[in-house]
Amino acid sequence: MPALLVVLALWVWGRTPSSASLAADGPRSATPVAERSVAPFPTVPPVGAAPTTPPSTQATTPSSTPAGTPAGTPAAPPTATPSITTSEPGGTAGTAGTGLDAGRSEPGIRLDAATGTDGSVAVTERVRLVSAVDVLRLAVPDLTAGGPAFATARPGVRDLRVTVGGSDVPLAARGADGLQLVALPGSTTAYELHYVLTGATVRSMPSRPGRALTGLAPLSRPEAGTSVVVATIGSSVLNLTCPLLADAGDVTCSDGIRGRMTVRAPLPDSAALVVLQVELAGSG
Image (cartoon, rainbow, N blue to C red; front, side, top):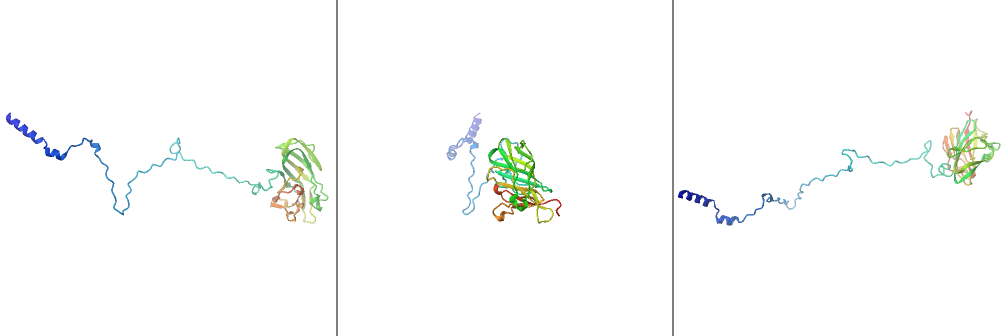
């Protein structure tokens, strides 16, 4: 037993640290192991060298798909404002603002005339007024101012129709060779006349066979100062003249092409007589 105790004492003495080693080590902290890791110091580049940019995290691009739109739905293409282009039959550009829309979208009278090979003229007369009227004054035009060839002309009207808003107005007579008053069912600023003008075509002398002159003027007699536009349809019309215009250079007043002609500018009602040079049946 005494020998065993001596061996045990020697073993305990060998395991006990010395005071010198304790003084060298000093007290130790009880910091957990997880907190002992230290971030590495950044690397400082040499003087004159370009700085090294640390790698950055790529930014996430926000989605352009609106909220609530299912993923994968294609975005709608941008809507283009359609342009808009106004044109007349035959390829002529819109004439709004030039006065040639008189009787349609502007105050005035517009005559659209289609000549027949027998000398008759089918006319649509559109009238748009500044002040409303309830009685129309219609008068067959006097063509004698068109020149000596019309001295014996006896114009007349047949198959007359008067419409307001697309509805026919009752008439006492559908033909006339003078003045006629038409009572309207109510006041209006716009109406249309449809009729056939007869006795307004005379033979051109001297001229080649089949050539003739047709006088054309409005049937309506609204307030003074109303502008008048005349347009023709049909290849039998060769030219238009306006004999009552004061300027001699404006007497030949046609514009357009054969088959679709119009006056170059609106005519004042005091000079609204147009002479058509036409080619009748039997011409060469």
